[in-house]
Image (tube, rainbow, N blue to C red; front, side, top):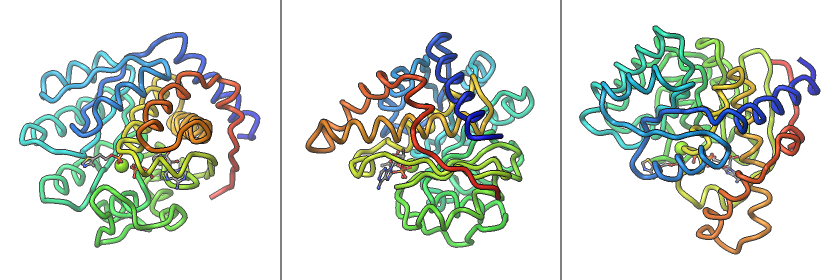
Length: 277
Ligand SMILES: Nc1ncnc2c1ncn2[C@@H]1O[C@H](COP(=O)(O)OP(=O)(O)O)[C@@H](O)[C@H]1O
Ligand SMILES: Cc1ncsc1CCOP(=O)(O)O
Ligand SMILES: [Mg+2]
C-alpha cells in the first residue's frame, strides 16, 4: 500500500464513523472509564460500558467492535473476559485489547495468557506492555520479566518493535505501541506516527481512551488502518491542545474538544512514515 492509499483509507474511516455513529461496547478499568466513553463520543462513536458476562456477550453481538482493557480487575472479570473473548473469536467480531499493567497479579497474567488463542484484532499498549505481552505469549521480542512500572512504560517505543511485529504476525491483526513517536504494525509494514504532547503522559487515560477510539475506527476499517487512524487523531489533537493550555487539568478537557473538531482530511494528513518490516 502506498502512503496515498493509506491516507485515503484513513479519510474514509473517519468519515464513515462521523456519518454512522457506530456503537462500541467496552469492558474497561474504573479509573478512566468516563474518559474512554467521552473520547469515543467525541470522534463520532456511541459508547456502552459493562461488567457482567451476559451483558458483555450482548454487546459483543450488538456492537461493531469491542474494547477490552484489563486495568482494574474485579472478581467477575474472571468469568466475563474469557466468555466475551470467546464470543468475539467465534463470531469474528473485531476487538481491541489493552493489556494494561501486564505482570501485576496472577489473575491478570492468567486472563492475558488466555487471550492468545482469541487473537485480538488490535493490541494497543505502551512499549513495556507490548514487550511483556509478547513475553507472556512466548513470541519473539518478548521479555520474561515485565518492566511495566504499574501502568507506565520504562522502555522506548523502538525497543518494542520486534515484539509488536511478532504479536501482529500471531494475531493476523495490528499492534499499536504508544509513546513520544507511536509505532503501528500489521506484521508486514510499520508506520511511525508523529505528534502528541508532553502533557499526555501527565493525564490518566490517554492510552486507555486511545484504545477505545481505535475500537470505534475498527468498525469502519482494517485493524492496521483503525490503529493508525486512532493514533493520528490523538497525535493531531494532542499537538493542538498543548498550544491552548497551561497544565494537565485543562489539557484533559480541551483535548476532547480537539478530538471532536479534527476533520477527516486533517487526520489523514497528520505526519507519518512507512517502512517495510
Ligand atoms: N512524550 C510524549 N509526547 C507526545 N505524545 C505522547 C508522549 N507520551 C505519550 N504520548 C501520547 O499519549 C497517548 C497515550 O500513550 P501512552 O502514554 O504511551 O499510553 P499509556 O497511557 O497506556 O501508557 C498516545 O497517543 C501517545 O502518542
Ligand atoms: C492509573 C491506572 N491504574 C489502573 S488502570 C489505570 C489507568 C491507566 O490509564 P492509561 O494507561 O491510559 O494511562
Ligand atoms: Mg495504558
